[in-house]
Image (cartoon, rainbow, N blue to C red):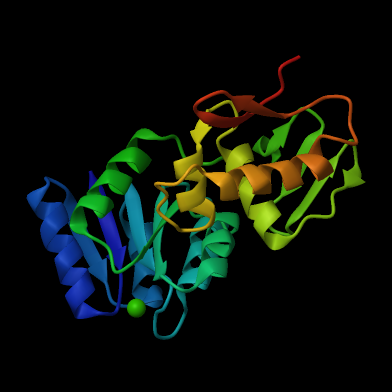
Length: 224
Ligand code: CA
């Protein structure tokens, strides 16, 4: 399994590459986007770890060009803890997961292993469930062609539910993914947000897509 790390900060790059090599992966590194784009065409990588902040071509552009070249390997991007919008932007641009800096190596390894097991996200047409369609690039959601008027947060929540449709997501997981908070509370923030999303997504339509799984969390699926 070969991994490419694209990161200009030596410290982070060597921390990652050392840990991944010790875990049995083959690792290449690139300090910038230009070289990374050459490498992804030369060699076949099973995963790319991509820092958003790079000199020259930034991580967003690297991500876009990798996907534009039809390469579908999983991409894990690294972003600063306070850059909340980056997460949505990265996932929408075709990344598969993200890590907030600073991170522990155990987190990296867990994400890498999960991503390598998961088939890569396919093209946009996969982001349809029943009559719900979401366009991640333009951040639009429609049901039966009717545009849903969602806030950025609601869109992020819906995006997560759709990407993982059919999978029961716990409140804790949703909170971590959408709000970046660690919950030991009752998950009230998530419940409130789900209620708001339902009022736009499900209430006006006969077919309900978000389902509560008692004691666990929520799942978005077409149950007909
Ligand atoms: Ca950087």
